[in-house]
Amino acid sequence: MSVVIREVQEADLPTILRITNDAIERTDALWISTPFTMEQRRKWVADRQAQNFPVFVAVDGNGVVCGYASYGPFRAFECYAGTVEHSVYVSSECQGRGLGRLLLNQLIQHAKRAGFHVMVAGITAGNEASIALHHRLGFQNNGILPQVGRKGGRWLDLLFMTLCLEAVSKPEKDFP
Image 1 (spheres, rainbow, N blue to C red):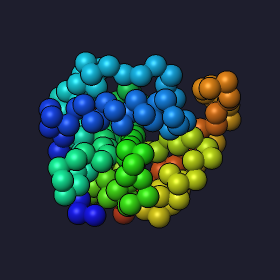
Image 2 (cartoon, rainbow, N blue to C red):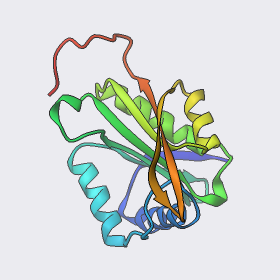
Image 3 (cartoon, rainbow, N blue to C red):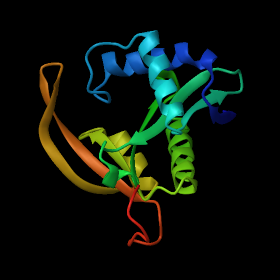
Image 4 (cartoon, rainbow, N blue to C red):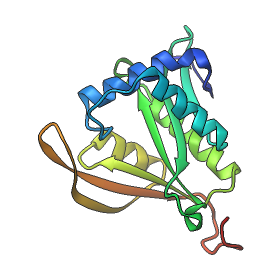
């Protein structure tokens, strides 16, 4: 499958909304029970762009958006400014084709160029496909928070994985 990774465009929003809401309704990947509206997705993209955070889409050879990815702040406090948390979602019909890897790799490269130090993944423990993808790209397990979420009548555990984006482990300056 021929795929192009590019910045999001306004015309991509309906498909991003469909992918997001499908993940909400059919999986534990998003710990949300209420589907998003188009206006909420539009605001999310606008907020990311206003803060100079990327939103990428994977587009197949027919021009169909098959997935999207972004990163943003890990925590709101200034001393976390060198750390970002990401999300990657691929439509159910396009999963298993390597698109998640392409999107995540694009995010990693972007975050490195932007000067971030660590990228965090918050993954539902038991999501073996996502965990394996992150391991393949160098992420390390950093702990599980047991039963911190509840969806579909079940308690969910949250696995944190991180990737150090820099070769140096000691910052030359404090953020911001």
